[in-house]
Length: 206
Image (tube, rainbow, N blue to C red; front, side, top):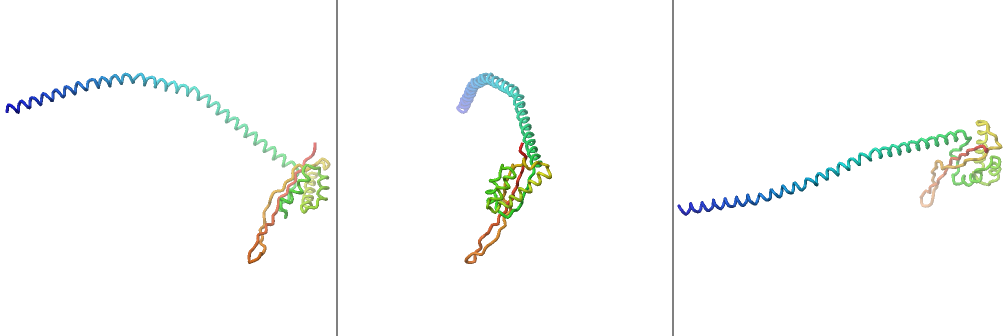
């Protein structure tokens, strides 16, 4: 019994010593933690100050950026209005300028352009003479169209024939009619009958 009591006393004594050691070991750790937290505080304060300064700089620069954006938007709007005005002016000029168009002419635009290039920028009388003496299939069609444009200029716009000249002439591709021709061994070859839209615009020389 005495021996067991002595063992218990020794175990209790050991436990007390271990708890005391643990308490002693914990104390410097808490001290370390406090020191670290105290050291970290000024760093966080400096970071907060830096953030505040950055926010102030951003706020100061924002109105300048807004002004620049508003200026660019205003410039874009003015450019758009200028473009619209130019387009409207061109449309008005085209309406006033006498012209004549032939649609779905039974000839390809490629063949018409060969004849058209000879009369572009020429006086009306000279253009008619050129068309009369050009041996091409498109020349009689273009001559007839030119005479129609001259008549429109004289009677609708009351212009002087001696001052008229061919300002614009162009031929665009029209609808293509597709046909078939019989070939050997039961095959069929495609035939494309092309058409064109011819336009002549006249103006007066100053």
